[in-house]
Image 1: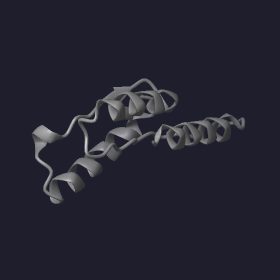
Image 2: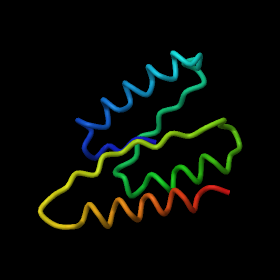
Image 3: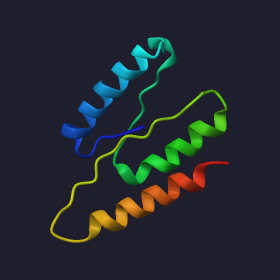
Image 4: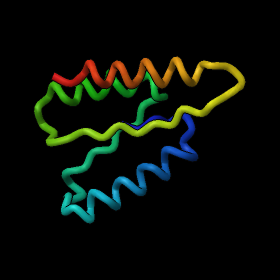
Length: 88
């Protein structure tokens, strides 16, 4: 799952992660990149894909940029907590 929001950052994260997966022997046909609107949506999509049982692993990539408020802190904390609850 990759966040479209801040795609200047996340598209580069995808490039680097794809290169790493290929170096580890992953076939291109075994890799699915799913773009979501923002970091907030990542945990929901992770859960849906995890429940399929099809994937050996899931990688979540997003970028939360610090702004003028503490919004980034709240968003980062909740996305992380949601991802942790998705396991199991």
